[in-house]
Image (cartoon, rainbow, N blue to C red):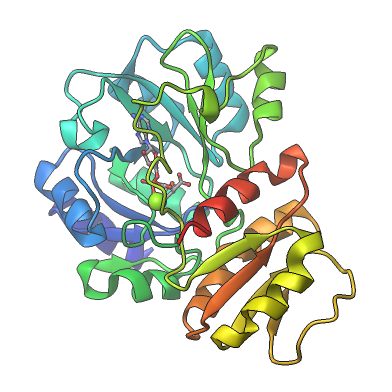
Amino acid sequence: MQDIQEAVRLLRSGGLVAFPTETVYGLGADARNPQAVNRIFQAKERPHHHPLIVHIADSTQLSQWAKEISEEAYLLATTFWPGPLTLILKKESHVLFQLTGGQDTIGLRIPKHPIAQQLLTAFGGGIAAPSANKFTHISPTTARAVEEELGKDVDVILDGGACEVGLESTIVDMSGRMPRILRPGMITAEQIAHVLGKDVACKEEAPTLMRAPGMHHLHYAPTTKTTLISTDALSHYVHTVQEEGPIALLLYSDRDFSLPASIHVTRMPRDAVHYAHDLYHQLRLLDNQHFKRIVIEAVPSGPEWEAIRDRLTKASQR
Ligand code: TXA
Ligand code: MG
């Protein structure tokens, strides 16, 4: 509680507070303080046109930030909040342009982690918070990872242990005529479609000018060269690249590959929920060990794997 009070004091004086959410750690600032919000962009080395998510304590605050909120948007809010879902809605006129990248919409989310809830409730206002990593890097899922990413650029880091979900929230655009997933997450398009009782468009169908996450090719990426490879091609590929130097392999299947003894193998969980929980942590561990390359085995094609496939694809563009 002492830490929460101190964090609130820092937020009120324009400071940066890293805090745990159930998805990943966020780098928070008072969403109504333009100088504080600018500090987020500096700390992350993030381009200024890239919009931020505003976190709120409860849905009564929604109308302070957004307008023309549809019944469908409220339905998603009551179904999935607090939780790993971000709604894109038409913004209220006071909303700082730094938060929206100059667009007429705002991203809003109520996180579930108890520390995030305590912080938001004690602060009483909106907290703008992107993931607490340098731009394009892997999002942090532990307080230690935040420290590695941002060090002294953040005024305090609230330690809430390892994040439960491990991947960033699902982002659904509810500002247009049709609901549209801009970033897949562990709440799936199917779940959202089921709640709304209608189809939901996915990112591929989004207009190309939309500033959706991951439009930058390099996103959620280790600094080590990373390759995503199908199960069938894996053994041959690993034999080919092992001459480059030490190789790390993130395995999904339990198939018995005949692999060179020098390969560093990490076996990932077989189910999507646990795989998502571990992914960024494992990638970060490998990234810190100076491998020549990280090779990742592709994961299954089911809907519960979609967010993971999205992040693996983006992590392997380097
Ligand atoms: O799980 C999460 O969403 C985490 C935790 C901390 O809440 N936050 C997070 O924030 O992943 P960030 O900034 O790393 O990613 C948010 C993405 C950005 O890539 C941005 O493009 C998109 O949300 N976004 C925010 N506002 C938007 C808007 N008005 N329209 C379209 N995309 C928006
Ligand atoms: Mg991010």
